[in-house]
Image (cartoon, rainbow, N blue to C red; front, side):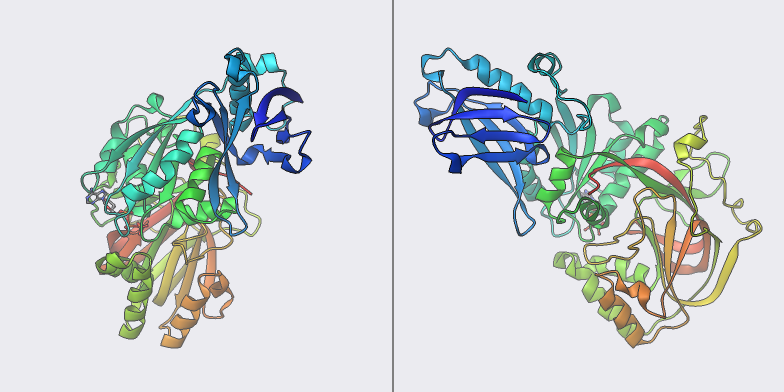
Length: 484
Ligand SMILES: Nc1ncnc2c1ncn2[C@@H]1O[C@H](COP(=O)(O)OP(=O)(O)OP(=O)(O)O)[C@@H](O)[C@H]1O
């Protein structure tokens, strides 16, 4: 343990100490004032002149980001003053303890490492990180800028430098992700929805150095309508899906591996990446591919954007009332129960111009042996890479961030209005998968053939029907998060 009696806390002489467990302040004359903060809740510290203290003392402010009983995280500044500060002689203690707190609060620190000495800490201060923050001013109900103002102090208190860009048009984020200098930043953050994050992923994959770019850490702050990835990350961390809590796992988390899937389709989509030597379009999805009922709900709900996340509820009811049916052919490679998929980066050293697809047949050719087919009427088709498609849609409770699988939730045949209602009402808690009309298929690769005029929604972006193919690449991307 490292400790010092060089500080006062609320004008009382105090002993501060840092151990592997946390930061302790004890006030010998007032034991009731003793406090302990776990390092996971400490963002960092800063120093600065405190005019309230007569302008003489240079306080050390510890930035704590505590979780309250209601699950929300709130910033709290704990101010310590150097007890010799009035004579101006003891700024050394303040500087030392600034480094101690930054050292222990740093999320890159190995929590298993042995307790360092004060000298070791002072000689190896953690590197200051720099984040490139992209803001979508029109995502969801258009609160991207306001959301950023809420989260900016959290990042700053974690000693993170910020460069902010507000996008000026659709696909601006694609261009930024395609061209920015990977060595100049530590993370790219999107303040927006899943469609905005999708653009960053497509930008990464368009680069010549795509294999480095796709491993560059990205983070999401929910300011869209669906926010499926933000909700997935929040659930994984045991946090609420609020901008502040999601900033917590950007500041205190680490890059976690995230599966990414190649989507090959006959339909043209303007930001698709054309695979050289293959006439079809490819793009890369991290969230979901939906068709039938849900794809139409997703896409048609765009016109109710002003309602925020309520837009889906509205569009769902309208779609249930329409009693529409869909026909198609779903062919898939069923994954065994205990399937262990190798990490993509362990499989291939020669990265080439695009991710290697090893399970899918050539586009338009018959699938290899052992694939299964379901053909006919479908009501629901929702292929999920992660657990949540939106804040209130826990579509694939079994999905992990990097298990190498996609879970396809289907309803075969023409569902009744009652079936739809039952399923949609059970969706928020993930209980729809227990309904007899719902089937979940675990796969690593599949094909879906639908009439050309049908709508597909890939990560919330619109695609036309026809033939499409999907293959998952385990752990290909990296997203900032915490696993509880
Ligand atoms: N300045 C801008 N003007 C117009 N469109 C923009 C601008 N910046 C980004 N966009 C577009 O906004 C689209 C939707 O953004 P986003 O995903 O943030 O919100 P959403 O669709 O409401 O949420 P979700 O995708 O979670 O449902 C993106 O695909 C992007 O092309």
